[in-house]
Length: 289
Image (cartoon, rainbow, N blue to C red; front, side, top):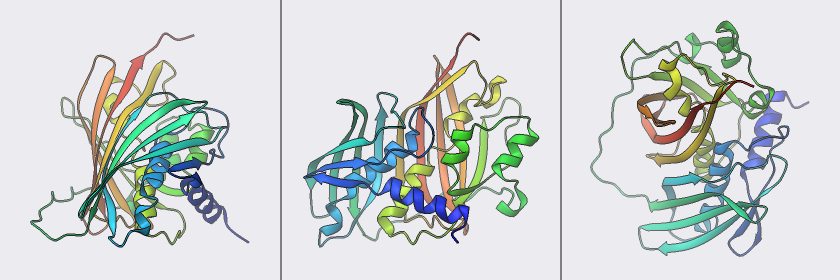
């Protein structure tokens, strides 16, 4: 009998493996969660999966090293998403792809991704910050319950394939807002290097923009707060070991004009920086009904 975590990971894999329906045209499955707005990480991850198709057949192994995406419209969770890939460039070292994600004939996301063959060169990286280990952090549900926050069912379904453990608040009064969490797949996926990057792209949208509202007496689930991702960028520094613990540290150096900007760094359990993330999101107070 397959346990719930393994079933959720299997379901996530099926969600992220897009179907080719014509040349450079792919279909991403609809999410299993109830009716609502598509999770931004899902659209980014499926678009990256579509962009990577075809490159896997090349004699040169080029893996995604960066992606930049703009969210244009809210997607519908009950409908599949169509991804059109434009092959902008294929060089000896780099390849570039543009992807348009569409529903109902209208674009909901534009993404550009760059792929680079493995090369050696100068190397340095920021040191991993000293934070409590995942074993010292509570589960996400327990942490929210302790803070008196109700966790939406759609979010529970979205995160079912992951073990997520947020750390204690890391922001001092007047300091740059900061938070961190540990995450990993809740069961083995046996993903290749391409799929591991796609999984990380999905998870990179977890909680990032919420960092911008931390100092403003708001929470991500406050009824009079409207929060939505506007754009999203990821730089992959190495293949992320998504089945082991990854540390996601986040800060927000600026918010204003109903927008908030946040940065993220993702480290593996050994302290190696495996990815960097940046995002700007809508953070708007709306009148209570």
